[in-house]
Length: 272
Image (cartoon, rainbow, N blue to C red; front, side, top):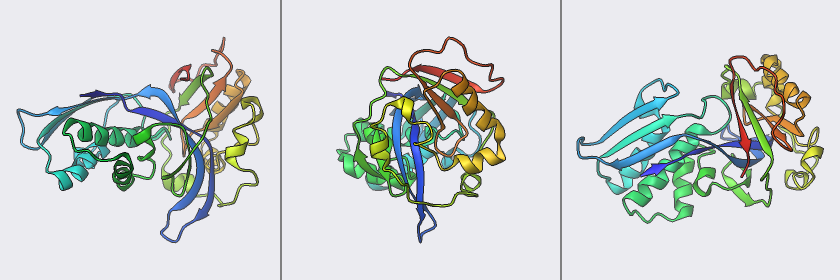
């Protein structure tokens, strides 16, 4: 079974309060985009547990710490799954705020559910996904949603960015979650994000914000510079995604000229 786990961007990200469990409540819109990894999963004839091969962006560390393998272990505990072969072509950058690892995990859950006829309902599959990470569950239905709680409570949104041209820039910078939260002061937003996204995209600047930008830009001014360069190139709206370090710009059409972003990861295309 061949799957294409896709990335997401955040349209706005408000950190509203710190919870008693140490997590933070947020408000954001998760919006799927076309940048994808390639995941292949099949029953194995050659191993007794799993085999795991990777290509593309190098993945460091013990495979058992990879969310794909954690997804397999999670369902294996409840369903005693057969041995499997897993192949991943990694194309979504790490440490970017694009949800690549979370997407891989969610698509793994969906693959195992279908491949072995587990008949896990969508709601239950989302509950499994939350055990793997706060934003894993959004990739189960994989549609634009307004997310609250720790990013796992979803409300339908009619937001559509179809036909806008997305430019995505990921500098060679890794932003850790503790670093991103270091200077964030939780606050209740004055205006509802669900209402703000009903405005024309050209009016979002200064109204729809990512609260992580304050701390991340202070530590990494070059990420701030990328955002300004996207505006200078004609972006209607630009923002950091998640806790960074990727920055995206939304354009009416493919920009005629973009600055040289050096050794950054750069991609783009029309949103669907």
